[in-house]
Length: 372
Image (cartoon, rainbow, N blue to C red):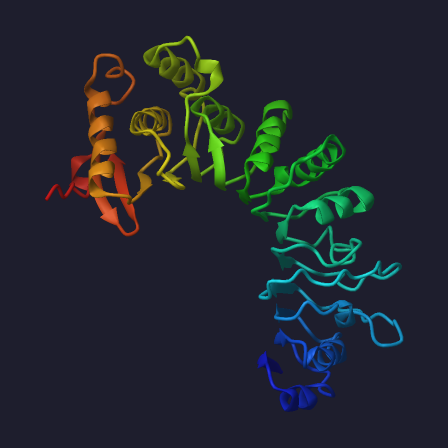
């Protein structure tokens, strides 16, 4: 049995005795949350997919605990998605000890401040959890650092989204972040991060850990990465196929070096590697220098044989045309001509909301630029 949505009280009352729902979509509101919680608990043994849209900050512990504080176990629940649609922070849920309510969870989505005081959502499913969307704020950091069992053991996590956070990571939590990420990143295939602090810890981890990574897609929003560090990232993750980021500077390591010597040095580091990057999306573009973007494209095009597309956010046709023209100019310049394959062709086209620079070794495979 499947319920596509639960909104009205009379609908909830009909669902409560069912005990056979496998999928449930709920709206958690001030005037119905008790009945919603009752419907969820009544179907605990059969539910496989649970989505709760939270419109009220009311304590949500009742999805697990009944009025006598007896906990429900969801032995078959695979996907749990909690979405907060109210402006207020949710009431804090006291610790719920000695229970593993979601032992077979494979996906957990909770992109807001965790309302729970302990690791009850992550408890016991470390070996099954495959997808995780979390906000790394002080509450989450406290949970991760206090309940170390959440961080230990082999992880099956392949998809991680860390939503935007302004968290200033103290020394106390820096170790927690390092432990958390070093345990799960080697298994990840997709990683989405939003925030400069998280990026810095990721780069530090990649730089100092001699581990083979499987990451195929990396998306970095609200992050600024220098070109030198981008080269380091590619060295550490040669499996990367799709990348979203802003390259906003050359890097402090480049101070005192000319542009040509810098690009040649990075080219020498990357060229021997078997890089798989096929697509680079520039996340923002507004604060990114045309010259730095063009130099980055030249470096990637000359070292990543699978690179076919660079997506540039359309701010104006003139701006994307400047980037394209600069790439073509650098390709033909004496400083870089020997780095870029003479049979490599660039073209410019538009796929809203991006301008796309196509890269190919055959002019017949290009979408030729529209310059009118």
